[in-house]
Image (cartoon, rainbow, N blue to C red; front, side, top):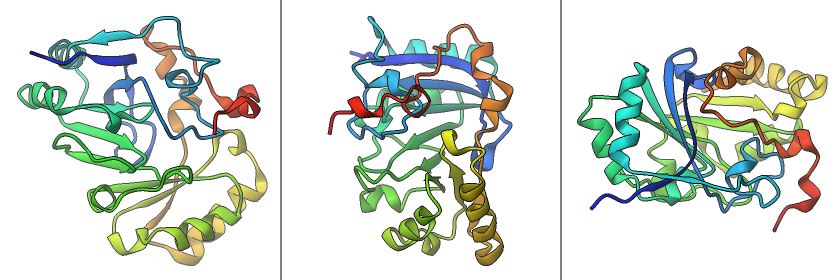
Length: 230
């Protein structure tokens, strides 16, 4: 019997980040996250002040059928933290429909299902485990301060993996001259595997164009980080 998944939202947009930027994508954002980043831009998936009154529980077959009917080029499973959920059935349903499956994860949990692409965005509150770290096809590092560049380089051997390491300004710092300047200089000084990243979909507001998406609940923008659970 299928195991329904808690779905915060699902919608058709395009990938706004990383190596697959610009591709038509069907996003499945799952509810729940134990990591609790203070700048989280999907706080509605876990934060008690922003979680919606009701969460849809949808069978994997129905999610996969909705994805294929959208006509999207890829499916992106995200969250919250999607890897806390059993994804095998969803992956199976997507795979028999020949849809490329992408996962966005912090890397701190075992990936349950065979993915075509894994974007690992490490978080200080819960660092990646080795098995997921070694599966990553790209890394996305969130940069809150210029010092983060050196801290992350020292904390994780991402460069040794020889896959792109995208450096993203945390969205509330997207126009911060110090953060952007530090990323600019880091790229010029170090080159590959480092790449300058950005959340291009937010400029286009493409997610909101699909009525199934929920309004963004960003802790950094709403200045609610003082209510975080440790």
